[in-house]
Image (cartoon, rainbow, N blue to C red; front, top):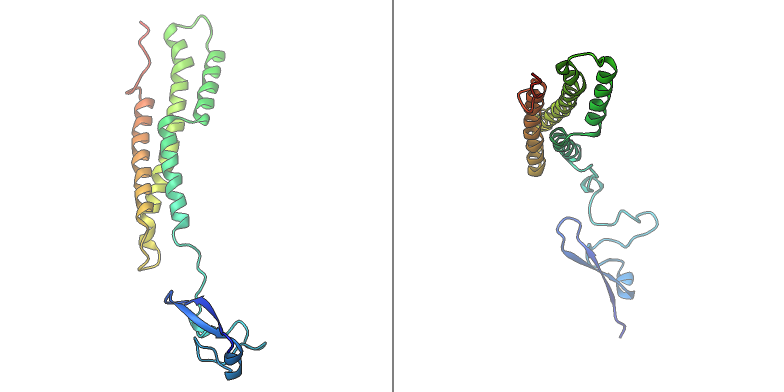
Length: 192
């Protein structure tokens, strides 16, 4: 008596394992055990999975990848707005250099301090405020996006959390930038 080989294939919809008989008896009967259909031939190869083509899974891009990336960018820009950036450092150094070149040595100490340090501090505040504003806008866009998207599609909770973090960091960074620019936070010392 010959033994029959059985192939285990995962079920497409149910995740259950289907048994497919393949042996001399299965070939002789012209049927397979799992679907009860005729075996594959050259004309039906690839189409004998027991499901119609209309039921075949449709490949869709992952939902929310762009929103998740935007939320992470928003949070990152909020952190940069609080901690400072290379662009802010360069703007500050350039403004300080321009202040040194334009201020004569006979100018008062208050004018020299304002030109060399005050304007550089304000440039840093402007760059930080720009980063904070962009972080705030991107985070708000990510949070508002589901209202304009496909109905019934829910935004992933982690995307909302990261976007809220970006909005919060953007607001804090914007408030600090305004306070630095208006000399409410760490203003210049008096030179009298």
